[in-house]
Length: 302
Image 1: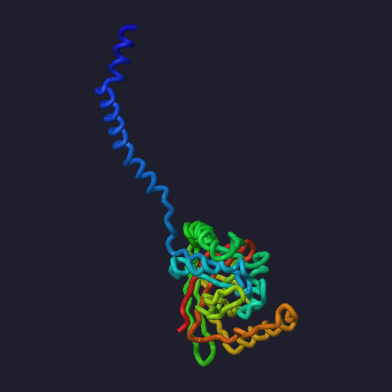
Image 2 (image 1 turned 60 degrees about the vertical axis):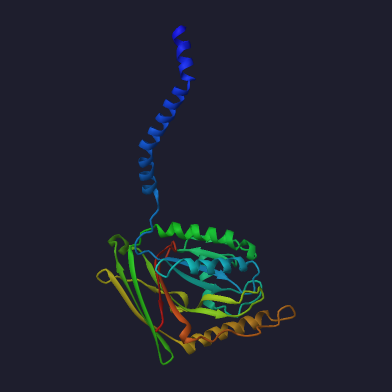
């Protein structure tokens, strides 16, 4: 009993507390490098060469689309074209949108999305939340998490894309190279979208800046099946810009004929004209069945 009492007295002494403090400090010095190594090993590094495709279904006549549009603008600022490729499909939600198109509707139907705003990341993860400007920051964080997850996924493909306008016709070349031979048996579709980098128009929801607006897609949105030739695939295609404008105008006139009335009297301005100096191409490779996007690329039009 005497020995126990002496030990307890020593343990409560200043000398004992100082020994304990030094032992804790020594232990921390020994463990800290191991903890740092573990943290670095767990850090998520983007896969080399992977470009994520972000598709936003929005509308200038849709009040809940305000937050989505603001968040998308911020994404465009924070990600380079080597990291993320963007497509904005304008839908007839709330009020008909003069930047709407048939291909926008077909892409929404492909994903089974129910309305705008809806954001799709690499053909999979869908986010259908919206709101006013005050919700933009929260929505941006959701979008960013989805993008970052896909940036960690390695890509089995490389994709090169070039485009130029000659005498009113947009000429494009796209080339795929297979990096993983196991992918050769999968049914893949190459899509190419013609987009306008920026359109100024103030719609019913007050948003007046619209980036990366889809104007046309290869084969009316059906794309082309990828058929490998010695682990590569190439296409040459063309869009006659007058035909693109005519198709957009015909669609808008059809919408006007169907929906104009007492509540909505028609478009104040039909945004069917295409500016050749404002064009960009976005291409992406998508699995035919699961719709996963394996690689994407954007290229300016010369």
